[in-house]
Image 1 (cartoon, rainbow, N blue to C red):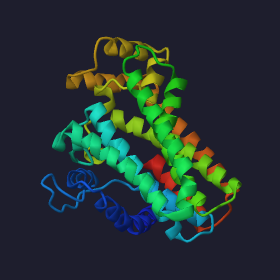
Image 2 (tube, rainbow, N blue to C red; image 1 turned 135 degrees about the vertical axis):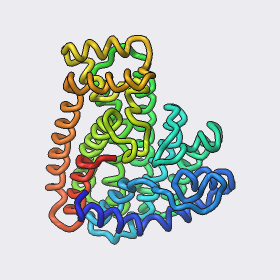
Image 3 (cartoon, helix red, strand yellow; image 1 turned 180 degrees about the horizontal axis):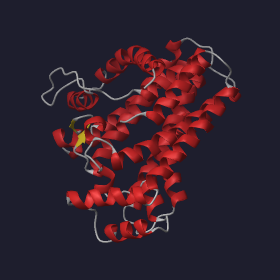
Image 4 (tube, helix red, strand yellow; image 1 turned 120 degrees about the horizontal axis):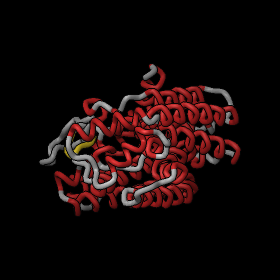
Length: 337
């Protein structure tokens, strides 16, 4: 990761984190505070203070930068940043339940520690808290609400499509990309423009930032897809080859399945009855995805999306904020977790 991206994430995290913790402390139910505090890494399973890795905080960084790109003070972007980070983590808590993932950020997931029901309620509490945070922010926050609500609708549709695809024997690659646009790109697009919306920026600036965020969101998901196949669990904090074990229809897997290659056909046969369970079958599936060109296709497409995202920044104008946007975009594509 570049020093510029590291500095930007650290600066914006320091701005947003104290206010995010205050927001979570406003949750009325102590059980919900415990679930959310654990998920963010602030508490351990017994409710005692902890200092676990809490994620990249990319989305709040984009929200703060979008306010700054619109010429506003960074403080204008804090409430929108909290809102998008809460929505992101609401989706993670729910996703872990649906996907039965047992590890995130090198810790047991929320449902493993607290049970399905409490994890679902904790995620729902975060979603309500995100809306409340914008309402507390006055006119600027209220201007952000339609964008946030539209994004949540897209996110839910994307996750629903993701679950449905796991039961489909054949999936079209364009269908997968539409699913990933809802599941991931919609939230990053919203994050990239929501601070500018709060600042009352012109539509041209808001649209350009949204376009930037959409493309970098697609790149982010494509990189995630690759890491879900070949990523090192020590870096990602998830089970190795997690998407292969779940027989997910991610973009590189579907690119391999529809490649028309012998490796793609062997992969289709391997996936025909059930998801690979034995380590040797998982390793074989990952090898076939690579041989069929799925990894190369996703990596190349992520780079293409990066170029498209940077082109949108030209409509925003030069300045420190756009330079930091560009550094974060490159980090998204070059990361290993």
